[in-house]
Image (tube, rainbow, N blue to C red; front, side, top):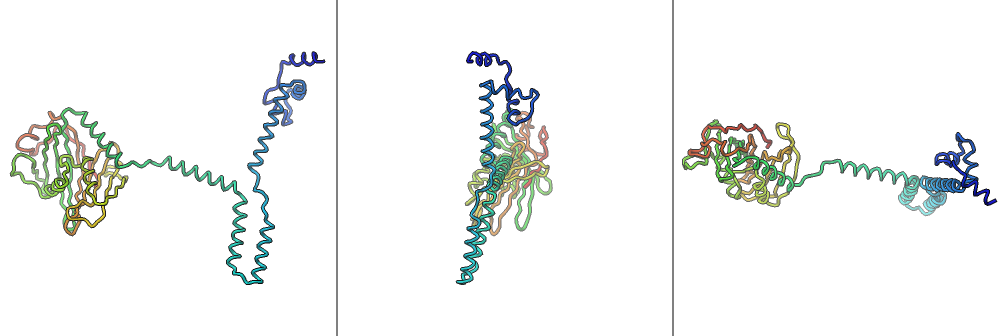
Amino acid sequence: MFSFWRHRLFRQTWHPSFEELMLHLDGESVPKGGRVGTHTKNCWSCRLRLEKIDHAISEFMESRNATFAGPPALPRQALQNFAARLDRLDDECGSPGLFLGLVREYKEGLFTRLASPRLATLLASLCLIVVVFVRLNLPQPVSAKEILFQVRQAEVRQMMQVSAPVIYEKFQLRRSSRSRLETVTWEIWNDTRNNRMRQRVKDTRDAALPVGSASASTPIPPLLEDFGEVFRSHEADLARPLSPSNYELWRGSVPQESEKVLQGTLPDGDKATILKVSGRGPFPIGTIVGVELTVRAADWHPVGQRLLVQRKDEIVDYSLGEIAFDVIALDAVPSSIFGQPAPDGTQITKPAAWRIAGS
């Protein structure tokens, strides 16, 4: 007998696949008819596989039923009896109706809360997923420190592209107070290698007034003289008025300052980041009470600045907006720029792009 079964066991050449075993368990007919059932009666290996699949399906269904089963039976009748007893006590003893109302409200809320706890868990999980997804897709805020670092890095890259660089900047300087508004156009040539600076302003009559030469007779417009005094009193660099170092000086001089990083748009439509510092008064005369630095987001280039200075009985707003900027090699700058006298109407050989900064 043993030899017979051993012969049949080792003679097996066909075994049902996993899909055929599943169909057999589901009671569905297969192309090979009842061959799976007959085979599993004689093949220990396939019978063991069939039992494991059956056992796995049973465990899965039990787990699923337990997961989606409703909440356990609640003592609804007991709570209803308790509420009825409270009603009777209310009629007999005259207890305040507020307490009974709270009890009824709690009872109804209890049924509502316990009726679908898994639904509440599901909703909470979905809300958490939505919150995390939204936060991950929101633009991450950039700190003022990171912005100033990027501005410095962009400046270094620009300077490295030119041998013996000269920085040319053209600004519109505006001073506004309660009684008047003054504006001048201000140009700067800054020879960084030889530590030389030349500047020129145009007053409201559009007359070119060269300043900064060796000639002591060259007049300095009152607006520029006033603006320069703000820089000198804080030991700021007038040759690079929009530099990150100057901004850090202004920020450190504002009493009890609070700094914000804002987003804005320049007049030409470019995106900009604005560093804004505000202080708390009262302020002594000559104190900087607020400062803003506007940085173009595309290339981390500073294009605007506002200084709010406390004067007698008022705060004066000094707004500086960049009109043009370029980095030029020293040998490409006309000799009259750094020669004597200071520049007159001569223009630089490389025209700068016209850029207006928002104030």
